[in-house]
Amino acid sequence: MNIQLKFNMNDKLFLRDPEQSELGKKIILHSVQLIHQNGFEAFTFKKLATLIGTTEAGIYRYFENKHRLLIYLTAWYWSWLEYQVAFNINNIKDPTVKLKRVIKLLATTVENDSNTLYVDESILHQIIITEGTKAYLNKRVSEDNKDHLFKPYKDLCAVIGKMILDCNPNYKYPKSLATTIIEMAHFQNFFMNNLPSLTDFGQHKNEAEIVRFLEDLVFSSIKTP
Image 1: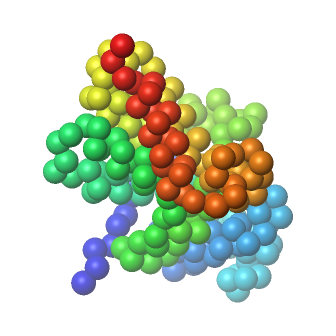
Image 2: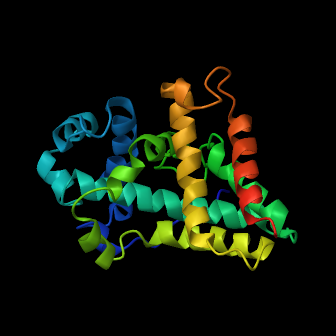
């Protein structure tokens, strides 16, 4: 029997908890598919309602607007990824091995998790790569930050920052490097598949090369002088 994962989501992300009803779960499941298929700009609640056989009003009972839904999806993904990090480094003592394991998680294709039936993490990961920064690169970021909507992302960065300090307690920029690892992993993946001349990986499209690049970047930065 599979254990179903459930994360405590900030109740300011939604008007009604989508995990508490079948319609809410359909909204999450099919919004991920629709955003991935058409892009966030072309995504509308009207299209989503048609796809799942409900009304726009029914979706608005759960989410104030599509941007708030995007923040919900990104927050959910970061919570899930922090869980994956904890699972993958469990019982590993060497901080270097831990950090390399995390870099690989961030830079390689995500597999769908059977413990979350209404979210396809492999597709959501692609949305995070292509659309994720839109959750906070906007004029409302300060207001949303006051409501702690980005806490799951900050929590994951804190975990990675601690691993960096475990490797070198004297390193001055653990937070900056943590966010750089995450965003660089996504940007390089996007460039590799869409703007290959901006990377050294476009010809062969090999995620393992991105992993090696990030390891070189990170461990060259944090080495003890």
